[in-house]
Image 1 (cartoon, rainbow, N blue to C red):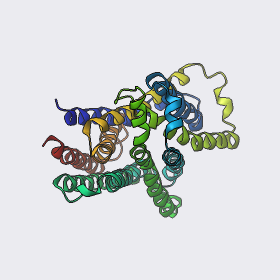
Image 2: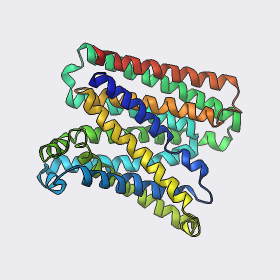
Image 3: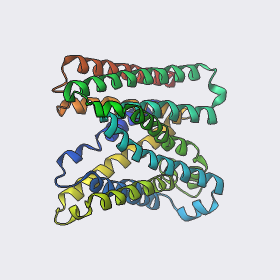
Length: 337
């Protein structure tokens, strides 16, 4: 198996892990969303990235001291912007529903997160065969996600008979979902703009596979700050901080599993980008987003989320998933040449 093929295989695994990271929430008892999200933030965005970076990168403090201040600042700024976008997701989901929000966010993120690194790092390849295949693949991703979004709306109408109150909030919810998608893309943009950090990590002794942790640590730590502040706000508003008392260790362990699945998917994504090569951050991000939607769709079906929707919404969802599968073949085709 060549490096590109193994990179695509890692992206499939990473997408599956990312799509699965919220599953433990179904088994967490007596906790509000903010209880779970606070611990997930601490584990996935602070503790695990720091543990991996400090254990795999020799002289990591020297790496950051020698890094260009402007590039380190950009990585931190992109991470903070990504963190804010996660808050928008929760608000948008409340207004227009999780299914539609999820599809809009990932579709926007796939397009923006693939296009900007391409324009910034490899604009000269846009007129090549590889560039054409990338643009075609991105269009297929957007089409697939759009079909999934339609299916999500059909499901919610079939199950909940959308209230007039929700209709009146659709426009703001759509705007927030699109803004969230643009913000979610900052995770990949920050990674693409932080290559000097990984190069310095490799120079000071880190393996090429582990060097990307030098980017993830400041990027994700900055993203943790808005999430922590929002959780603290919800604790004060809902008096939910007391839920931690007497909850036992089960919920804490499940929150750790969530963090490990999510951060593990990000680590695998970074390795896959390195193996794919020149177009890694563009092709890789599109495939990563597609796999998240595909796996999340099948997990939703297996856990009964579509049980009461009827056959047409489910068929539409499967059509969208099929389109996303085709997009992965399009995006991967040129890598095998």
